[in-house]
Image 1: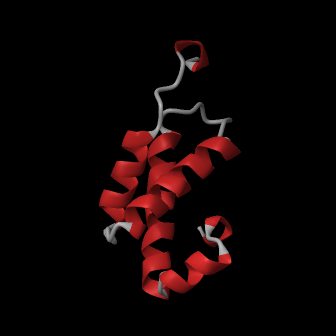
Image 2: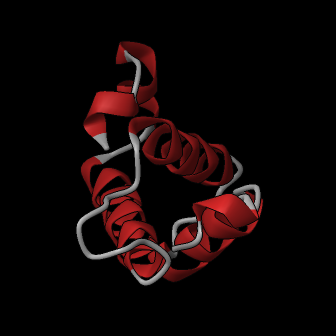
Length: 85
């Protein structure tokens, strides 16, 4: 998660906030694992979209990792039908 934080944003969030956001990102990526084939992983764009959504909600005061991941997943666009194996 720290890779997605700008240096100025790192001063806004304390260590417990960053841990909550990291947990939220891991939860969201774990939830996406069910949507991907075993050999695939969420791509960089998907990871960045999740991280940005988590940062957005955290900057508005949300600190619960479950709610952060749920909100980030809700903001992802649906996968096109041709991606489904």
